[in-house]
Image 1 (cartoon, helix red, strand yellow):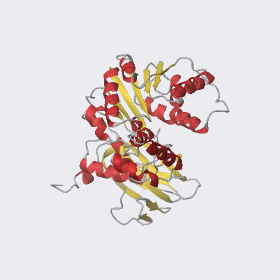
Image 2 (image 1 turned 120 degrees about the vertical axis):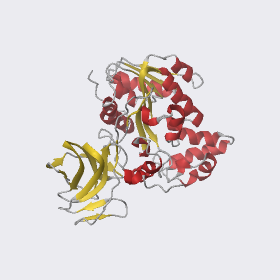
Image 3 (image 1 turned 90 degrees about the vertical axis):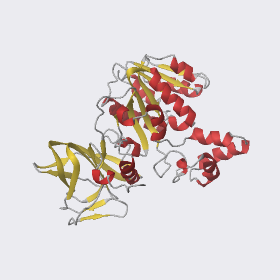
Image 4 (image 1 turned 180 degrees about the vertical axis):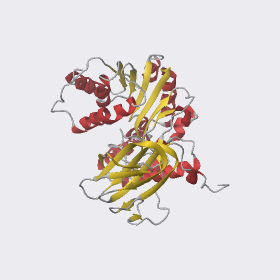
Length: 406
């Protein structure tokens, strides 16, 4: 179905969310699970940006939300686009779990898009358990755009370092330091009401998650993770950050069993309802390093590797791979090029542009002619390497580096 053009009155932020869901998130989901014949239940569909991106890609779409006004807006967006084959329902908060339970056995994909962070811990556990219960035995639970409490910056709510990892009482005492003025004003108003109003407001604005909630429901996350978020479809809106690479190194040392999605600032993953007999090999970061002097290359204090024209960075991967991901970062504009040198020769890799804090960022995902453990990377015009990724296990030099007895 060809969707109609947007109405001029539609909010730019709503349109941005629609574009990101349609152009990045939906293709990422479809790379792992087919949607054409699927029934998708979207829990917390809000004003329908994601619903509009999904509605003409699936057989049946069910959107549920406790906000009746948001559902009315979503229906308007759907009508303007001629997307009539949808079901959007406003359901009272006290009734929504029972309503969802009524779809047991009908659902192929249970979608939680930017939802879990707005729930209490008990609510999160209840919804995740219900998702496993409701989907068909071969069904999937898709989680998108939830902030990771283990990364240092609260990009989602307060825009402060570590605020999303604080215990509730301390977070309530520190919110006034946030540079996000509308957030502070809203919590000031909640605090003036007394009682639990402030703590409830903090929760509904959004707090971080981590692998811990999911382990309580799914147990062995490696056996359930179908798709992770180090993926070329997501890089334009989720360029890899240095803070994520630092967390990835820590998790590889202490929890190498975890899939790599748990090191991203935003948690995006596809989980299977039942364990997989053979879990896929996910792309994970290689620890950027200069193991010996490389003429024209230098490790910068912020973790980037600066590469002058002609410099070639040797990369030794844990196993032979046919796929390699690379990120570049530049403080200036202009075109960039990446060359990947293998024992069989070399090739230029196509780059996709994104932006990180307003700085142009490029990511490449390249499939090599022959599997290899050894490649060299060069930037013909120079620049900075920010990320190298590969499918397979963590680097054993990281996982074996944890001090014994710690």
